[in-house]
Amino acid sequence: MRIAYTTYSAPAWPLDRHLAVASAIGCEGLEIRNLDGRGLDPAMPEDRRQAIVDAAVDAGVDLCVVGSDCRFAYASADDRARAVERAVGFVELADRWGAPIVRVFGGRYDPGPSADEVDAWVAAALRDVAEAADPFGIRIALETHDAFSSGRRVRAVLDLADHSGVGAVWDLAHPQRHGESAEETWRLLGRDIVHVHFKDMKQTGGGRDGWESVPPGAGDLPLAAMVSQLAAANYDGYLSTEWEGRDPHGADDPTDVLRAHTAYLRNLIDAA
Image (cartoon, rainbow, N blue to C red; front, side, top):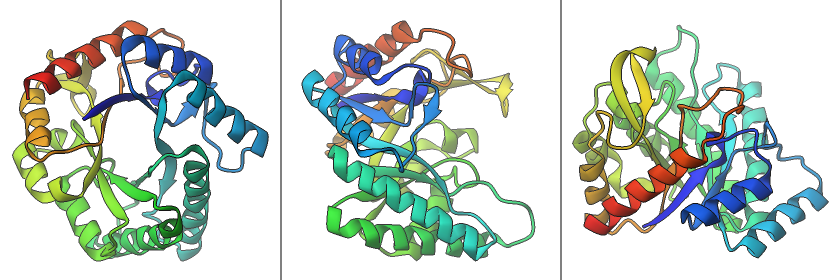
C-alpha cells in the first residue's frame, strides 16, 4: 500500500507547492483534483499538461489519480452524454500523466425517479466511459459519495455496469455516515476497490449531517481495522488523505495536518 493525498485538501495551492509538500511529508503519490483554486479542466492546453507531468517526474511523485468532477445521475440523456464526454476528456488527461485511475461520482438527483432507474443511468454512463478508457488501460472509479455513499448502492451500480474497467473508490467516512459498517462496505465492494480516501470523522451533531472532520485517530472511524482489512486482501493501491476540515476557500495551510495523516497512516500500514 502506498500513501498520497488529494489536492482537494489544499485547493488553492499551485502544483509546485503540492509536490514539495507531498515529498516532504513522505507521500509517494498525489491525487490531482484542484490546482490554483480551480478544479481540473480536461480542455487544458497541451503545454500545461506537459508542464504538470514534467514537474511530477522531476519531484519523483506519482500522479496516482485524476479526480474528475463528473456526475452521471441526470434525468436528461443529453446531460448524461455531456458528462460522459467530459469524463473521456479526463481519461485523456490521465493517460497523458500516467495516472491509472479517473475518479467519478454518481452525484445527487431530484426526487422523482426510482433508485433502480437512476442506478441504470449511472451504470450505462460508467460503461460508456470505461469502454472509451479501455485502450488506455485506465480504470473508472465510482466514489462512495453523494446519493451513492453506501457500498450497497455502489455495488448495485457496478453490477449493472458489468465492465472490468469500472471499480470503486472507498471513501472511508461516507458509508459510515450513512449507517453502513466498514465490514459491510468491505463485503460489498472489497473485490472492486481500486482507490481509498483516508480520513477520520466524528459524530458531533455539527458539521455536515452531524459529522465533522477531525485529526486521524480522534474520530469514530475504525481506521486500524479498515487498513488491516486492506492489508489482508493484499490491496496494493493508494490510500489518499482527503482533509475536509480545511478552509473552504483554501485560505489556510494544512501542511501539518497532512503530515499528521501521513504519519498516522504509515503507522497503521506498518502494524497491519
